[in-house]
Length: 408
Image (tube, rainbow, N blue to C red):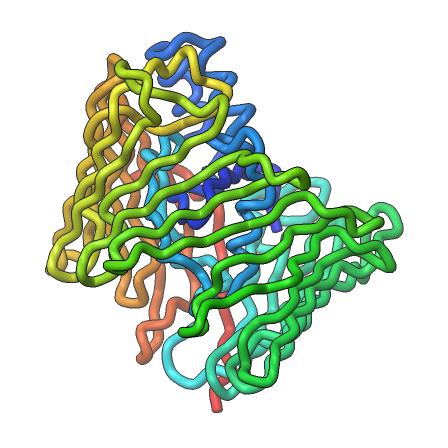
């Protein structure tokens, strides 16, 4: 649930985790102005506005991998995009982060920090109440603000996700229920996935194919109310287990895109290549490649991308050419991401609390600094109970939250 100070964006690469989802508006404007000065306003505008399909000119179907259970997905590629260089991580106040201990329910309320037409300072602006199952999984979430109210119910068969339904209890206009359904075969493997709204089917994965070991090697992606075939998804594993190729083909069998992952002995992605008719290419005309390195805890510490013409491919990709480095300070629970290129330098340092949520974020772009600081109180289980957000010491409180937890 977003308020007026937040702007969502999402970028979709097949089988990829993309660092960066929601930035405070102040940081978003800060980032926009500096990136525009570095890349040119027209080029950066294209990168920003086309981020939802970045690097994927025809791979809507490839995003279907996100609907698969973890055991059916190829190893995840930890790509860091330009927009992710200022990622603040998961804030400590994110309601979806489960509390420590054995919670049955938790309510996070965002409080108004100033008097206004909607209510006085200290009153509740929005809330999210989450109920947890015996395994700690989210079973129900009720989200409320001044304009809407939703109730999301998730069901499981033991550890397997079976359904998720979102009911719009309050909205500015009538909205049908949104739903997702997962179906499994007798051996417990996914055999069908559907999602839609009301009586209308929107996305459908069907006709799953597996090899003799049970690995997923293909399925159909269908979409729209008529359940029309959009593409065939094919997954091929190298004989040595060190490569995975994910291809999308249209109804006629013509290749639309292909991803190749190179894996190490721990099945971590150490190489990534994306090929499509309009995908960016390096100086030799080959698809650009991305290499990854990890520390002994399997955390990403380096991403190196082939050089390419960012301005030419602004509509296709927001991937920073060159090296992105990530360092960790375990003693102080800190992580720093740095990048120099495209005529600028970027650094984001994140300090986390004991639960792993971000409480201090320092972003520096070309020498200009933006701070985000959470000051929180904690209970005996290291769960935060109230937090306030500022832009640094001595600055006004921008946001405030409180949390109540019910435990077994």
